[in-house]
Image (tube, rainbow, N blue to C red; front, side, top):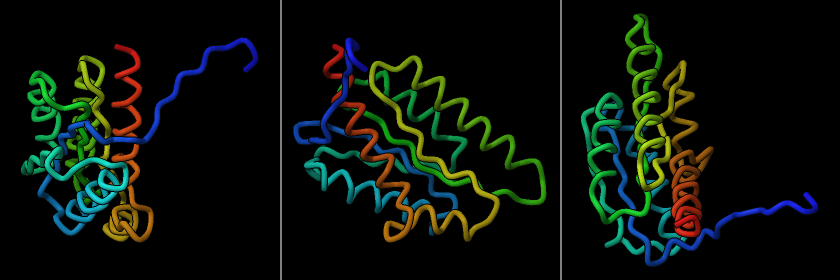
Amino acid sequence: MTGSNTFSASLDGSEKRFAVVAARFNPEITDSLLSGALARLAEHGVATGDIDVYRVPGAWELPQTAARLATRAGHHAIIALGCVIRGETPHFDYVAGEAAYGLGEVARSSPVPVVFGVLTTDTRAQAKRRADPKEMDKGGEVASAAVEMAMLFDGLA
């Protein structure tokens, strides 16, 4: 890496505001993701009053809500949380694919970072393990990514 310019950001989220868009579908999973995200944001110095949580019906509604939030001033990053578990029909493919595509579209066009925290698993057990703050804590992971990206975007302004 000699001679290269490297840009990175801290994980100090104090003085930053975050939007968390969390699906209600699969509540035992999404509530766990949300708990992990909120705890991690607090660990990074984000005040409770600087976190706005928006609940939506399911993963399908995450992109449209994130897109609306991205057009409003006030948040330094948007965290999208949801869970789609494979079932017996192709419904999984449509919802998971469109949630990912839609959030990707918002992220590419947004002036603020949009972080993807949608679990797409084959089983409920896989989803529970990934969402549990005491196990894989994917909610916490995406919250850390959101803080880092918010700080990085500040440096790119």
